[in-house]
Image 1 (cartoon, helix red, strand yellow):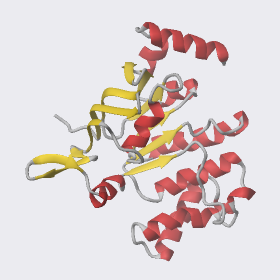
Image 2 (image 1 turned 180 degrees about the vertical axis):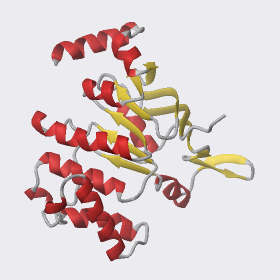
Image 3 (image 1 turned 120 degrees about the vertical axis):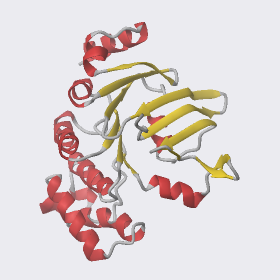
Image 4 (image 1 turned 45 degrees about the vertical axis):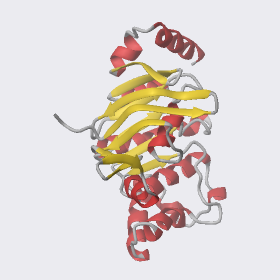
Length: 258
């Protein structure tokens, strides 16, 4: 049996009395593309943040390639992972955020080479060569010396995607990457993501409200509600014949709003 690239086992996350993720179980295969949909507050973005280890979990275990990400073995038992262990696990994962999170005082090129130089130990010339290749891939080779304030929102998001790819992750997470963009700029970012899916061996999880793109792009769609996966299946199953009343109600409301 093939080991999943990502596994959530009984993962719970609470903020005070509020349970955001409730005993979440999810397996994601290597190179699988999974779209995460659902209402606001259902735990979608929290799941990505836990996988990226931006926040800790309260219960359960997250594994990457069969190795616990949030815990490590010590004298035969799982204990909370040390920072060095967590850093090593995090190196396999890249994340693109809703609001770009570019350094405003750095050019597009500098934003991309910063982490490979400081974290991976690449020489500046190696990192620059990698960054130039990625900027070309996302269609921004002519913007390498531009600062974020000189770029459109869509261009900033494409730089953010290139920055995440510069770390050569095996897993790439997208958290509502088009929600801060004007509608006409969404297409250019989605085209880059589409290209990544076609040309690179990446496991991809995308939290999105772009239902048409989720239907076209994903191998599997997971509908989140109340901190759990209420229903999951192929795009044809979820968008064509959803079985759960909560999924049906959500999709009906979303499609009417489009």
